[in-house]
Image (tube, rainbow, N blue to C red; front, side, top):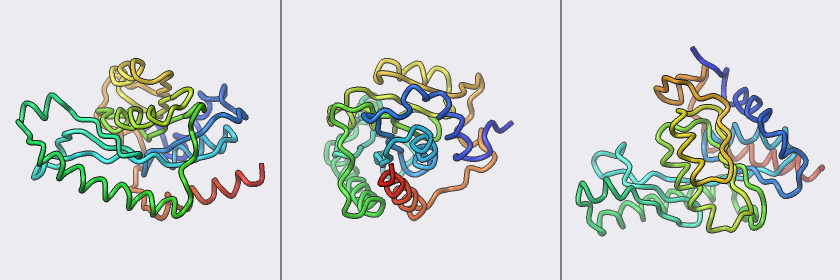
Length: 218
């Protein structure tokens, strides 16, 4: 049975668990595209905080793209799944090829979403890092590692739904973890939403522009 009507609904529910960060000038909300931006938009609106994207790309095994060798995040930070890389004896050449391909896509998305606007400065700030759910957590781990290099004061991982063991794991890498719901039987993020429609780049861009416009009136 679905817990959320859609990502907007999930964002509003998650925002209720983040009220300690409301109207705090040092707070920034970063959404992982694409679904995390819709959830993040509702949180940013509720908390009266600015919204930006933080992009993560999976490094898929050539020919078996669903198998993650690791991931890269905004800022060019790469996190490898060492166990799989060693087990499959993946060469540095293959890793470099996959990394460069995904880096190009990451840069394309940053340009598409943000245009000429620079990323929000997160140094010394409290960052709420949002996605629409955690399955394996690989993308979020890469995001947290990448974000650390930008020297925020605090990283809060916030998702509407995740497996309880994955949520627990993030307590070791983030300063705070907020998982609104942790079902005992977790079979994937999408099953907990009535509407889990794919989000387009244009929708992400529109939400970022809308959020930036609202911020100017604060």
